[in-house]
View (cartoon, one colour):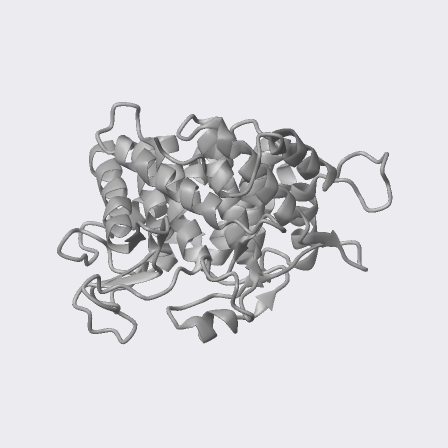
Length: 392
């Protein structure tokens, strides 16, 4: 009989109600017990739009694509046209009637392309379909490991980083669904998740390593597994969200669905095991909470919370995980507040991170309003605070 994940995490069934109530209570403005709950998703989007125009938001890159996908989810719930207009204005800096000029020589560059099919569906403008097709055409020739995993970058020969699947595979699956190209797109996207998972998993801990190097030549590649040595939180979160996203798209009879569900179940158990009991969040290196320099990281905590909640909602995992998600939501909400300027701030977000040792991971800047965290927060909060099944 498999162990009870709640008992292993030090939780009881009573926390189902207590955790949910705590999450909702955390939405109330400080000192206003009778005030209406704060829509923190709106607050984050409104604050970001006040801080940046589409022209000053930043250049083409995965963090902006992640954030704008989160803003798109808020638009889909609220119907606030200015939210969509802002997204379109940013994308139209890069997309013309001829599509987009980009070499897409690394997976990170592909993440923002996930919005192409969504923007085409929203607007009917052919340029977004053109851009999507240009990105789709990069995949057959993109370099891969011997077992079919896409290199993290064309210049990183043989390397698979857990971050990478979220950068490319949700786009590919969504392209297949939107434009009638399911055979290649579904298979390739789902296969990559399983290849990455098989190379990076640590079964005894229920976690993933950050990266893998096929020939073992990288200094961080260790042992027969040729993987890095540590379980960096956000890398694991990226892969988990990818598996969930693909399960939203792949049809019920697809032969790779069961394996994706198995991956979600593996991660859900690992997340539960390593959740910090006091805060409900997760550490920068997930399994080393006792290290004095380790710290609780917000973006990964949001990603883990999203996976747990969506997986329960879709029946991939049991309802016993619901209080784990509620506790995670409460923990992430504790990191958001209104600043002196009245704008929303989210703190303790790791800056962009490569593969390294413990000292490197612990020394990463703990940013406020880093786009990794803003995007992950919106994806999580739309799922937890407004559980209407936001997604594809």
